[in-house]
Length: 271
Image (cartoon, rainbow, N blue to C red; front, side):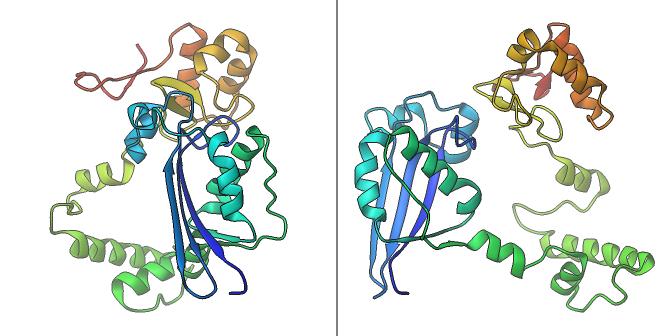
């Protein structure tokens, strides 16, 4: 190393750099001589933290109340980052865009030009491929012969599943061994998603667009202000059936509502 590298992780109110806000900054500055300097602070986002986000990182409105806003931390962070490269897990996709947006909102210059970025998530994905060949080697301890031959791949998929059930079939988090249990494990819906694919997500308990030109806007608002978009979406051949139904019902004034703890209803209710 010829200069320090700051390993960075952020928690936020969501994943949209333009709309969401940081609620925690944690850094470790690794110097060329191996010494370390840590920084960690909660941040008052000055907007409510969605309970869906609190369920992920455990940070609540009460915890950030009275903590510094990002604009108050910005000068100190700029000084901390001076002359440093960046490292972390997933920072290219999330942390650095979020950090850049916060500095911009604070009116502080933050330039990544000339800084080297090392993302261990990208390294992990490139060097530990999630392919059938890799799965056969990992679970069965042998190479996959005749990869991409349909018959060989089918046999390999079966052998991998049997090995997974054997490997993970014990303990408090045991993988089910029956077909229904395996189906439920594989097809469990993310509780943050309104639909199966996450085209809509819950934000403050409100169904919100997670894609397209209305990303981060409430479905109910779009149904009121841009009905033609929902009509187009409901008719598009590529739109999943559950999203079509959500759009059609929203046009009729019926939007999904999120079940609350203790409710007997299913997680998604359209009625």
